[in-house]
Amino acid sequence: MKRTERKLGFILLALAFIFASCEKDITTSELKLDLSKKATVKLYLYAELDKTIQGLEFAPNGTKVFISILNSSFNSSASGNYIDSATVNNGFAEITVPTTSTGVAVNINAAEFTYAQVQSFGSVSTTISKVYSVTAAQVINKIYPGESRTKQITYDGEAQPYNFVEKVTCAFILKADMDETVAGNENVPQGTVINLYTSTWAGTATVGADGKITVAIPKNDAVSMKFEATKTLTVPPSKKFLYTGTITAQSVSTTYASTITLTGTQNEN
Image (cartoon, rainbow, N blue to C red; front, side, top):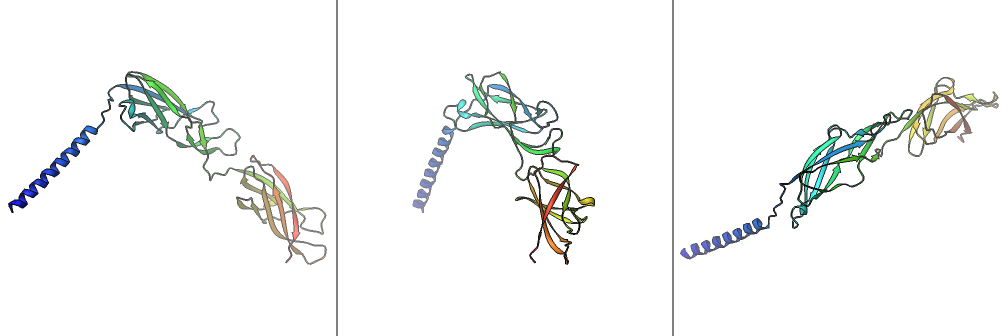
């Protein structure tokens, strides 16, 4: 029994020695960073938010700005980064940063934001949602204790969401030879449903009075049209025809109705 107690005591003593050694290793491996010396970074952030106003606007309130400084600036043996952040208010953000008597480099990262950018007068869309970013590296080099340094940053990256499709609203009068007993082309009958499509979009329009349609179509894309209708022939009976045509690419919305003539082909059945 005494021998067992002596063995247990020896094991506990050995474990205590191991844990003490580990604790000593951890304590002595800690790196001290002297962050007592301070400087001030003042940032002004701009973006093109409204194309009806000259110049740039302030980045929206609440936008975050992050700064980072290499820890090796404070201790040559240290790794990683000192990181801090601030929030933009009226286009301005201020951050107190640690520095040294030899100066440090402060890296600045302005966070991305999404904003409905106001488009210029006469544009198809009043606003377009954009994702704003700063694409160039932003650095303040050699900032010393007690200094106050100012930097102006412009959001130079503007990306539209991938699913955004700008459309124009245009009017057209549709004509086709739908009656062989009458010379020339006729207005497509009121109530006819026209199929509209491109390689990436499809829609329909219903013909109103005097063969007119008004439709929103993708900007700068030619749009194909087709519909089926019964054509009156000089030799009865009347037969089904497939009528096709094309709306040329439109870049602006219009109220003036241009005329489009569709060509008919008799269905085989």
